[in-house]
Image 1 (cartoon, rainbow over the protein chains, first blue to last red):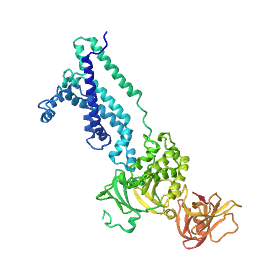
Image 2: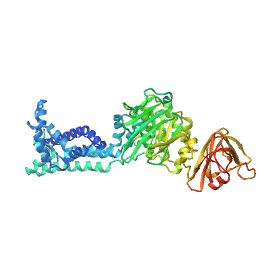
Image 3: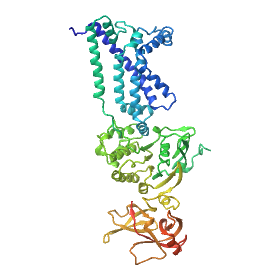
Image 4: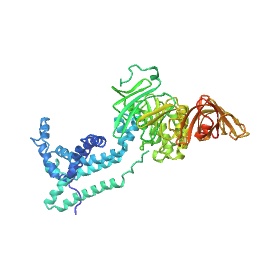
Length: 228
Length: 367
């Protein structure tokens, strides 16, 4: 059995990693303030926003993909916006996948961060304030270091979840080699074409990758720091 | 007017004027108080009396809509002013030391120092020495004992060179042994710092030992305030030292009697003999005299075992908790003693305000 990966498969894996990295970085930027707000607000909107963030956890990917496809299409609000900006429409492009994945992976970033921020509590931030730290200063020098285990889980989960995405990608991106064809879609193609050997190779790569991520998450998670 | 006087009075440059009024579900705070700008002021009261809330309002950790705070001429809060906590020149010690677990002891001490404009390494060094934590600097907080953590917490608050130190029951989370370990450091703070200290406590022994001034709170309201020695001597206030009523006297060690192992403690109004301790002449001490250890006579008795007999004038009598007992306050010079008598004894000796009596003090305890 030839276990070496072909040029096409390597391209697919590279695209998949690029997508997952881009989405994870964007979600670190978007998800962190959202998680911070959810962890600390007393607003009556908290429940609503929290439910919206969690929606991709329970929604079938095809449903989410369908609505995103409409929104990004020429008549959809996102589509009108991107066309006005001279970017054309997003479906069947790499950035279309990125936008869709950001929505789909949002809870995997926000929920671990929210839990981590909530477990810090009010006290360390009050201490920081009595030591002359402004809110932003205290966030970066106290909240972020104390929530570091949460950041690690959130990053790994988001990355792994984006790598493993299938349904939303198929709805938004189709199957364009080098542009939108990711590993999970290519495995589907191989199976459809009864190319079990090729499917085995890529599926094996995914299996090992996912296992290693989870192993890292469960085995190396640092013990929660004891409060002083 | 609720916004306070437009021009601070002379006292406002020395003192802390605070007015806070707010209602939460199940709790309300309504205080209007002028706190001294020097010495140790104890905010004293049972749990739920609002003393911690008042402290948090002073620090800006709690924001009540209707509040006014003038710290020695600086307006920290008024109708149209709000200075956030991080811009108030204060140090705050929390009940649990609340050290940052991701930083070493030194990192904790430097956290505030780095953010303080008028900070300098000298103050950090002083704080480290004052609290005796020089050997702990490289350690992480979770490897420290509770007492060590609290000492680091106090040093961290001092390292920002604050103009006032706020302490929220710094000993309450510690066991008796740790308390005894920290109390001497708190006494050093009191004696060596020239900034005011506000000290929240519900423990009468701590207050009697540390405070110069006391603010008594109950149900979110101020019950009484004044110099500790005066407030303790008030018969209408239920402050108990341990289980009993009594007074606190500020005294100095005046004389040692090595032959009989006694020392004479001079206070304003007289002196008392107590068991000798190895203290230098002139050392300031604080003693407490419980009401149950004081009896009264209408003339001096040479032939009894009680060595401490002080002449004084009865100035107030009140009922004690038991209907058969009375508390009698006797002025001895500028100081006061409280004696507990049966009402029958008080009646048969014709004890009433204005008469001269000899207070016989059976026991004096240094605190």
